[in-house]
Image (tube, rainbow, N blue to C red; front, side, top):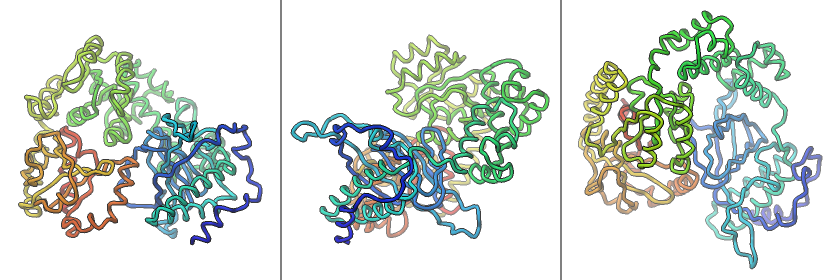
Length: 573
C-alpha cells in the first residue's frame, strides 16, 4: 500500500480529452498558489433505510458520486446527481443527500456509493503564518459543482486511498491522506466540467424548475417534454421516477399550493386567484382545490380569518398545529424546523429565517413589517426593542415557555380562545390524554422502573440533558424514572458528562440526541468504534436509542405527541 501511495503522488498528468475544463475559463494568479486545503473528515455514503435529516456543514463539504443516482437538497433546492457528479456545500450551509430507490426491482437494493469530504482552506501569509480570515473554498481553484467523466475512475482511486490512510491511525498516513486530498482537488479543478451534463436528469430538473416559475402558463405534457427534448412518454417516466408524481400532477400541486398562499394573503377575489395560478375556470379550480385539500377555497379562507405572524421560534408552530391553524409568516428551515417545514411550509407564504435568529433578527422583523399581520405570536423573553418593533406592526401575544406561570395546557386553551378555536383546543387535548393513557400503560409493562437518561452529543462532548420538552414528556407526563445523573439539574440546563460517569451511573436506558452537524457526526462515527463506548453496559444490552433533535429538543404540544410516539415505536408498540 505504501509503494502504491507513493506512486500515486508522482503520477504524470492524465491523458485523454477532458472536454471543457474549469481551469481554462480564467487565468489563476500566482497568489492562488498560497492557498492550502486541509482535510478534516472523509466518509462513504451508501443507501440506508434510516430517517433522512439535514446536516449542518461546519466546514466546507465535497460530495462526489461514484455509483448510482441520488438527490442533494441544498439551499432549499433539490439537485439530481448521478455517477461522476460532484457538489460543494459551503461552510455554514445545510444539506441532505440520499440515493434513489432503484426503479427496476432486479437492481441491487443497495446500489449507490458516494464520498463526502469535509475540509477548510486558508492562505499562507508572511513567514508562513495562517491568515485569520476564512477563505471561500470555491472560486478560481474549485467549481461549486460539476461532472467528471474520463477521470472518474482515477478520482475514485484517490478516494479509496485517502479513506484508508485517513483512518489508519498513523500520523504519517494521515499526513499522506491530506496530501492526496490536495492532489485530488487539483485534478478536479482541471478536469471537471463546470456544469452538470445536459443529460436526462438535468433536463428533468430544469423542466421542474420551469414549472415552479411558470405554473400560471398554459402547460401540457407535450410542451414540458419538448422543453426537456425528450419524448412525452419517456419524460413522464423519468419525472415520476425522480419526484414520485407525474409532470401534470406536479403542475397541479404547485398551482394549488400557490393558491393556498394567495388565499391566506387575501390577494383578491376567487376568480382572480384562479387565473393567477393557471386556471381559467374558477369552478374547475374550486373542484380541484376541494379534491386536493378536502375543503373548498371559500371554506379554507374562513380558517385563515386572522393573519398571524410567528416571531422568534418555530416551536410556536407546535401550538398552532394543535389548533389546526397556519400562520402567514413564520421561521422555517428544512433542518432547524423539519416537521413544520414539511407539513406546514406549503401553507405559509412568508418563510422567516429559522437559523441563527440573532444574526437575522432585523431581516425577520422587516419581513413581518411588510406582511402587515393582524396578530404576532412570539415567545416571552424577546428583547424589549424587538417587542417595540413588533407592537408598532400589530397586536402582540407572548407565549410562555416551560418556565412560565401557566402550564402548556392552559397556554394552548388561551391561544385557542384568542383565535376562536376553543373547540379545536378541547378536542386536541382530549385526544392527547387518550394517547398519554395508552402510552403509560404500554410503556409501564416494557420499561417499568428502568431509569432513563437523556444525553446529547455536541462536537466531541457528551452532555446530560435536561431539555424542558424531554423532561416534561418522560418524567412529568409518562412518569418514567429519571437517572440519578439528572439530580440537581434545572429544567433547560445541561451538564457535560463522560463515558466513565455514564458507565458508573444507574441509567438503564439512554436516549441519545446526536447533533446533525459535520463536526459532531465526525466524532460520532469515531466514538462508535471506540472501546470506551462499546463497553458501556447500555450499549451491550442494546439499550441506547438515537433520537432526532426534533421533537426531543422542543417544548410544544405537537412535540410532546411526537416524543410519545417515538417511545412507543422504539419499544415495539
